[in-house]
Image 1 (cartoon, helix red, strand yellow):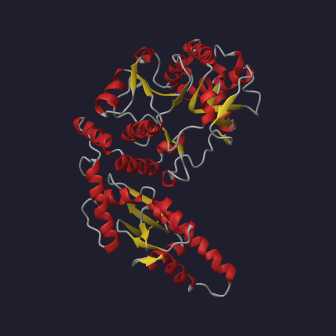
Image 2 (image 1 turned 90 degrees about the vertical axis):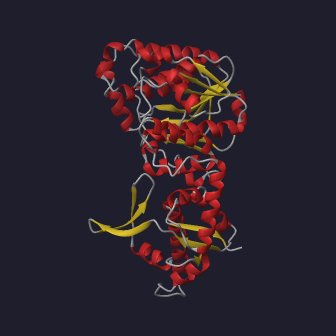
Length: 444
């Protein structure tokens, strides 16, 4: 099955954020998305405009198997109507396909049943008050509405399809769907300046898709059977759980604006795709900007830095030079190792890392954690955190830490209290790994 992606610049330039925390993370998303797709599929094609070709292909050298420069004609539309590019590309397909958004990342192939599916989407969404408030701010101005949408604002049980991935074999449906979507947009051209065009996308893309499929009794195969509320997604940005607990991430909505999620993605890109990350650094440098990267990276350098950090970790002696970079590389998938140790009841060493301190802000105690790009990450702590961090002032095994923390209990013979404390410590250690204030390694 052919995998396709689409990028329309919408007359925007390199430093535009495209909804991300910072512009560089937008490009890192593309680096990660295509590289993960190419692991599992022989055909991964890009549909883009001239500017997209220049950045994604000429500059970042992303490994698409074929590139189609066909989206320049969309420049007559406002850039806020970003979903039109996807919809146009759907209608261009001549064989079964899956369109994957540039903020979607996979760690396994899509299900086999997708190969014969008529239509495909990520999951069903249920509309919340937020959804309807958005819709109600648009409908008073509409000059045209597809028949399929006519009952949307009166049926509070309405559903739609999240289209982080979209596709299928019913090419006739996509032709008709694209025609209706473009008609919906173009026949309302006179009121574009009266509505929030960015919010309009979800209705002529996701809602219309779902309604048309339902009205025509066309089945849709979903990647997830769960139904999420439109603004209440959870877990779709959990990089610390890939590739075992999580094999699909989609940085929709607030996930791509979350600094911690973006930093975790950056660490993953640095570690596994330095050959694309380094051109990104160079691209910003040529533009007069820089990402404060330590230096251009390649796979040999990554291996060398990881080996250095492993030695420093075992010696509990960390060098200042490149510490944050090495710490971030070491942290990738570390939560997975932690879970493995716990599942197998294997002991492991815990080492507290430099690069953070305890401070007080507005009468609240917090961790202040150093991050790259001169940013500080803040995390509110409690009394248990302070005790644990003190106990971790020297390297200690996990089982020894549990025993030492039991000494703080009033009754160490209270089996229930011991178990509760162990569960608290287990959760805290997982958080500390995610925060990058500790690291772990096997005792064996």
